[in-house]
Length: 301
Ligand SMILES: [Zn+2]
Image 1 (tube, rainbow, N blue to C red):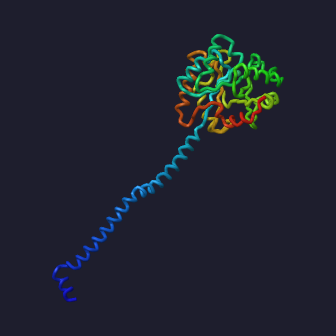
Image 2: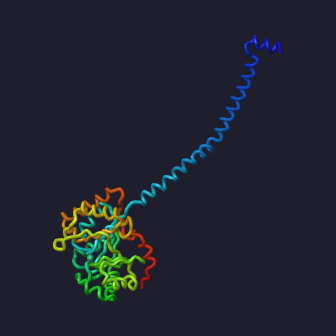
Image 3: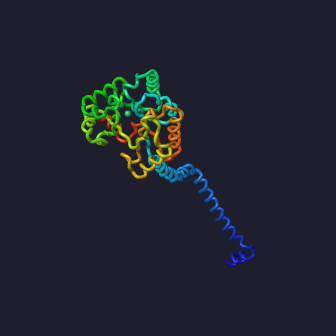
C-alpha cells in the first residue's frame, strides 16, 4: 500500500495512468474493431438505410400519379368530314401533334375529288380516330323524317360503317345530341329517344354526344365563340361539374368551320391554349370512360 501510495505519489500517476492507457487502448481497439465491423456491414447498413428512402419515394410516386390522374380530359370531336375544312384541320392537328376524333359522313368520302383525297389521308393520319356519323346525314338534314323509322336509321349507319370499313361501332347521330354507352342514356329530343335506343340495342352502336359545342354561323361556317370564350366555357363546365362524366368533356366542332385559313387560326389558337394548361389533356374518344367496356358488351350482328 505504501509503495503503491508512494509510487503513485512519486511517479506522477504512472501506474494508474498505465492502467488507464491500457484501458483506453482496449477501448480504442474495441472501437476500431467495432468500426471495422461496421464497415464490413456498411453496404448492408447502407442498404437498410435506403429502405426509408425508398419508402419515401414510393409514397411520393402515387402522389405524382394522383396529380396526373387529376388532369381533366378534353375530347375534341369534329363532325361532317371529309369536307372543305378537313385539310386545314389536319394541318393543325399535325403541327400541334394532338389527338382528335372525327365523325365522318359516308356520302362525303366520295362527293368530290378534294373529299376523296381527304378521305384517303384520314385513313392513315396518325393520332386520330374515325367513326360513323351516318351515310346520308339525314338526307341533308331532314332530321324529323329521318328519326321516324328505326330500321332505316340503322341501315343508314350500317351503310356508312361498311363503305368506310370502320372497325368499331362508335357513332354520332346527325342533328341530335345522344349518348348511349352501356347504361348511360341521354337524348336531347325525347321524341327521338326510342329510335335512337334501337340504334344502340338493335344496331349495336355506342353513341357519343357532346358536352359543349363550338357553334358556328350556318351561312358562312364561321365560329361563333372566340378561342377565349370557348376556353371560358370549358373552365366553367369543369368547375361547376356540368359535364356528363366528371373531369371529362367532349367538345363538338365541325370540319367546315376551318375551310378558310383565317378561320382555322381560331382552332389553332384554341388548341395552343389547351396545351398550355397543365391541368388539361387531350384524348381520343375510345379513352372516354366506359367506351371500351361498352364496345366489349355490345352485341353486333
Ligand atoms: Zn353532323
